[in-house]
Amino acid sequence: MPARPRADARANRQRLLAEADAVFREQGTGASLEAIAKRAGLAIGTLYGHFPNRRALLGALMSERNEDLFTAAEALSAEPPEVALRTWISMTVTHAATYSGLATHLITGTDDVTSELHASCTQMAAIVDALVRRAVDAGVIRPTTTGADLHALTTACAWAREHSSPEQADRLIDLAFLGILV
View (cartoon, rainbow, N blue to C red):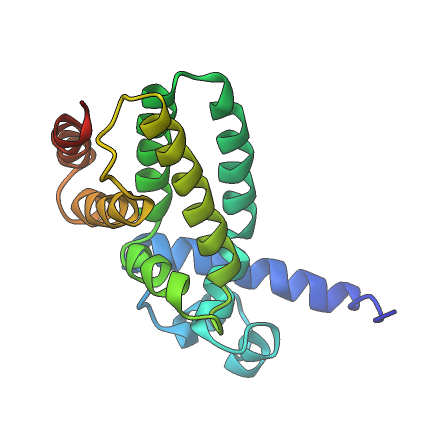
């Protein structure tokens, strides 16, 4: 059984995560890791000791948010298929726009099995696939619609939310749904 990290190491990790969250919110996911370490009052080596790369830091930051998203997805099974799918898309757009640039990491995390984001991206893809199958089976969306289509839509809408506004992202979701509804 691995040893539990020392209290100071746990505190350093929490400071790094808090500062990374603040810096990524201000500057996006491309922000300087050195700036994050400095804001946390730690050396860059300490940051890399906890998070060997940017993806590992993002993965740690998104872990709790991902779990909240997956829990919310479970509740969608009680909703009508169209409502469940639309709600999932809206939730994932908001989720993917947490930090400017995050949507790009999420889309590449789906295909990159070495990414710390891969497992959560794969789980998100499985959720949207199940929601699409359910909506197709209920006859509410076109049978040619795929989970990959909606994953791409989510990423595009998250990008719009980052670079334009939440209202623009919502409008794109509405327009896309007009195209897939039967």
